[in-house]
Image 1 (cartoon, rainbow, N blue to C red):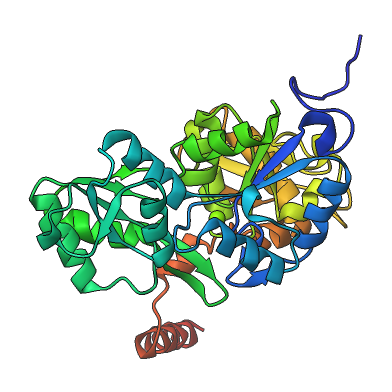
Image 2: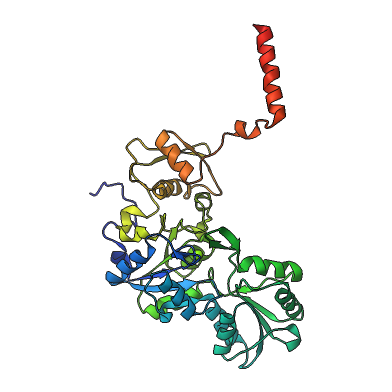
Length: 378
Ligand SMILES: [Mg+2]
């Protein structure tokens, strides 16, 4: 009888190729940040190709065509061709074409790439509500401004069908999180009291289309967002690896609802070069020990944790919390090593007493008064 503490369903041997034959990568925050590759990502994708895995790039960002995404990836040192790229703009255009007659006018709020996708499916892109659009399609573009949003409001109030390429409220950049398509969609929703149909992730169509194009059964989805990449993967029946190199914090991972919990978790995609079973599956992670006391998770590491990534500790915390808890738990460290890793994960809490301590001139005055009292007592 095997009495090892390996949990059910865990991959016990080998790297990604032992469990999967294709990898569907998100782009922003997963492979690149802005125009720059995330450290080690180009080499990792090349290594996976070398192992015989098929690679696809699936992006919710509709500001670039498949060809432009492949160009961006190649400039960031990834080997990529347009046929390997799926965009939410293409899925949105396909969705419109399936519902509208050939040549129907569609108001495009977004980039030239989205306008081209609308043309490519036989619809007629227009620029104002006065052109009588029967639908509005909205995708990310840094050029979209108030005038375009106003045209969308008029068309939607006039009864046009509204499809958004994606709902990501932020896009990661080297300068931090910037407003994404979801933020601009929210402006239109606020003004119309109407919500769009979302074509990209979390709808699984983008991933399913990419997986079908690969022609294999077992695809692994890799992304940096819980509410798009992971939810879409789970809806589509795919396993998901969440990477912490993009927009998602450790606290958000711990608080993820069941529908957004990934099977695997890692700092970045370089984890895919290592055996996936022991290193990145959400589960027990020696030497980290997690115990739940009341509603608080206690993290400790009795053995040396040198060489252990912070993500390993987070996997152990998730494995302890997810089956029984919901929302964000309190996490405390029981030793110095654990305290260090919680700080790196942004999970270290400032004690409540410190938060409430008075600051500024009044604080010093209070301290002085207490000191005077002490002196008089003496
Ligand atoms: Mg992303």
